[in-house]
Image (tube, rainbow, N blue to C red; front, side, top):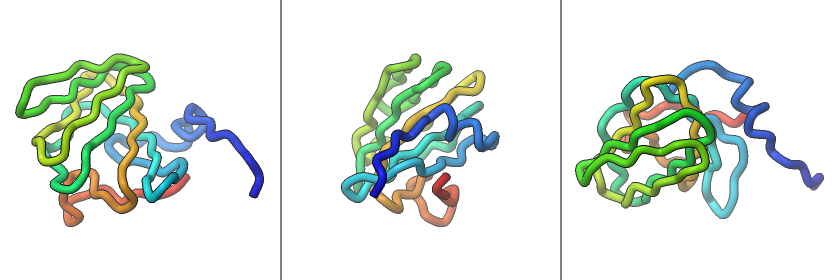
Length: 118
């Protein structure tokens, strides 16, 4: 195995669609993903796992049933499992996500975006 760094900017430059997470690495049964966001995502929750958000650029508000959290570049927030939430970005923003392999981004496999590795 060759040691190689993952360049997140390069990975983000390979796609333009919003709300479609792309797997850039894996560790300990988790997908490490980047996603471009703009507008409002659907309200959802994850019954079995927390939801990790790290903003790479732009501003993202994580709206939750417990209150809103505004994230700027370099800031992260973890939504506890079972908490209804949705990310919102007025302008395009880029986020790094970490989730257990196969976790649907909407909390429901029937409505989730298909995750692909780039």
